[in-house]
Image (cartoon, rainbow, N blue to C red; front, top):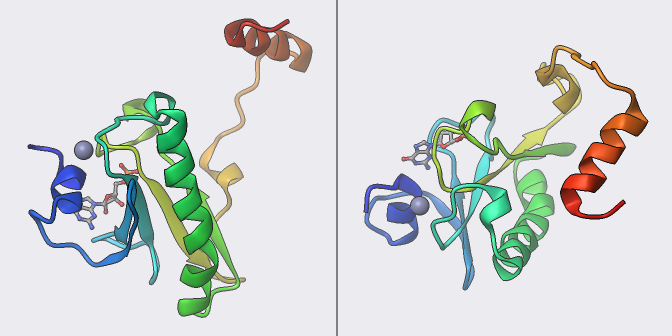
Length: 139
Ligand code: 5GP
Ligand code: ZN
């Protein structure tokens, strides 16, 4: 088994585990962006979010929901930023889907999700909406 997160889930390599559930596990990021930076992973090796089963998605996001408040409170945060790098081109470095929770406070110097992107918009909203509805198989 070469996946680092599978090995953490299996207890083969150490991690600071903060929650264990039947289908999802949460542990501290080894290179935290802030105190309390937590990663939540499904126990099953699933590379990206679109490959999760409905039950896998439920388990993963139930644990994210359960942890968001306690992670913030434990570190005296005022808010959290919650995000997923979904796919290698987005910057995902470990191909086992994981949700980051990072505690935030006013004036912490970090940006918002909007600051990740240099705005690059080429199509009108109705055109984009139609393309996504078509991909979804609805009209
Ligand atoms: P990504 O860039 O794929 O969204 O995030 C991967 C995260 O996993 C990074 O924040 C990185 O610090 C963390 N990470 C990488 N290797 C390990 C490890 O062996 N243990 C833990 N706890 N976190 C890791
Ligand atoms: Zn894995």
